[in-house]
Image (tube, rainbow, N blue to C red):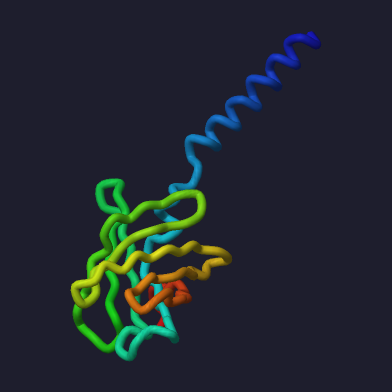
Length: 130
């Protein structure tokens, strides 16, 4: 009976652990949605806007829209790793690498412009609220 109980408990724990691993949160969902950002050290016109991330065909895509413009800039080379997310945008014919991460539902990071690093902070836009 003791052997049966130990075997049953072991099998039960393995099933729980495996199902938890199979249903682990998709890291892309951490970034999915629209984020309102500010970058105070950025040049005028580039200091605020929104970043939108979408999951399409199991791939993270997205775009950026500066507050003072209707122009949409597509994200390129999006990669998610243990330390956060890296991507690139093209602004005025210059490649701008961006690195960031989400902690406590705040997205922070740095854009490396030709003039130097520019920090940014973003909060998730909750649908239905203005």
